[in-house]
Length: 146
Image (cartoon, rainbow, N blue to C red; front, top):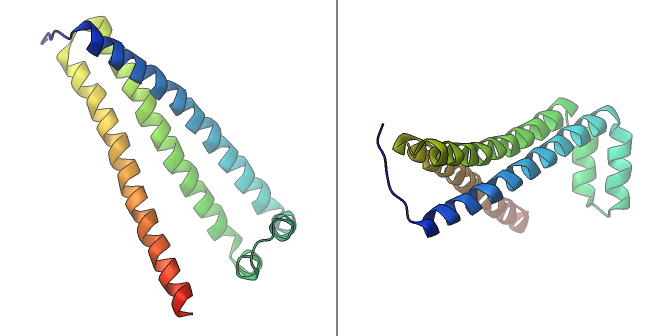
């Protein structure tokens, strides 16, 4: 078991970061549950989804997509979105729990695990952010050409 010494300021900041990560992780779980519940509700009540889209002033293209789309595709996209949110929550909560394990045991491998979970969270968010930017650019170009 390797031991490491961290100064008090570093320990304080790591602990504060862990607490925020824990809070944000449970917030992500709440949002993920809302995504699943809303997706299943709109899957079961397609007319409600279309009426909600009309009352929100959604464009005619989106209304046609909702009317013509395979409901299973919409449900699949909803579940994929929820899974992404749940993975973010998992990495943030594991970041905090690994940090607490490090504080309790003073084992350097636990500190490595802490930063591994943080790295995975940041990697996941970076990949999906880049993907979102690329899809947005493709959509903008498509609608400019069309």
